[in-house]
Image 1 (cartoon, rainbow, N blue to C red):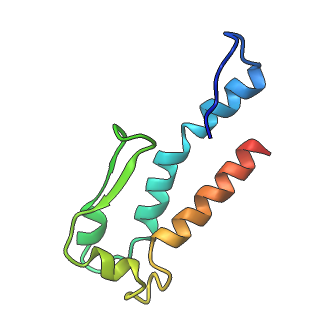
Image 2 (cartoon, one colour; image 1 turned 90 degrees about the vertical axis):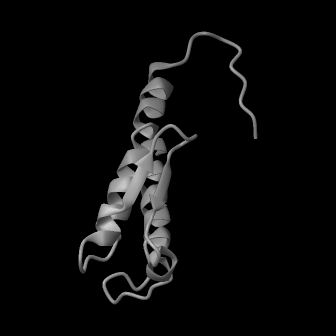
Amino acid sequence: MALRQTSNRISPDIQAKLKRLGSVPPDAYQFFRKTTPIKSGNARKNTDYDSTETGGTITGDYPYANRLNEGYSRQAPEGMTKPTIAHIRRLVRKILG
């Protein structure tokens, strides 16, 4: 889906929502990190966020990242991605109404 702006005037309500939507990626990163199981702290320490990518990218740079994300840990039986996606959906619904 493509959006095209035909006017330089955007309603203040839409501008406010766009600004609030900009906070979703960093918030999602914080949620993802908080959801990441902690035993030695290595997984959380090596979970990074790159905001230069479109929308931002969360990267787990440790050998067992996929295993944790598949629910290997009792601390995060659903992994980290599924709960983070649900969190993002809640945020977007709240912002857009």
